Length: 223
Ligand code: DC
Image: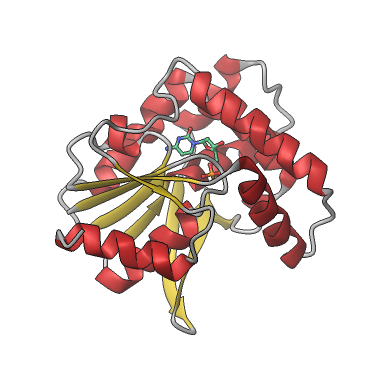
């Protein structure tokens, strides 16, 4: 069974999707981490983000995979790029600021989407991203689209970065979110969009537990 969770940046997708996967004992796939890992590779190689051909060459020669463990009751996922652990690096603001430029290249998406489908098809997976319910798994058993106000999303992302001791300014976090959402939702190749049959959940004033419970109820058909 595939549970698709889509939504804009910092709408709570990762926290919620990991908790749902843990509670249901499903595997978890963070498709954003795949685009982030490729972006990290482009940065490390000092390639030009406007050189789409070079980026497409990178994606053809890139291995991304995940390792899951449960520590202290929480699902912890490590991301590997060509066998290096890049879990921390892919969250750097340098990566966040460039990832949409990589994710908008349709030849990159084709490779990534194929990988995502191969990984999760016919298995029990919670898959989170921007185009999961619309494009990667249009026949997913359950589809959710999480939203939250821009202010709330910027606040969450700012606190998350602060907690990890990243040097950030609240105004630049909000600016980065808005610019990423704009590129993600206006690109021509499978943009960020709500599937017509997705269950929409505004998480602005909801706790993580409330959202998790609402999703689990919807999956069980109790809503
Ligand atoms: O979920 P995230 O913020 O880690 O995603 C990083 C970027 O990757 C996001 O700005 C858009 C892109 N992305 C995408 O285009 N399609 C997906 N399925 C997942 C993420």
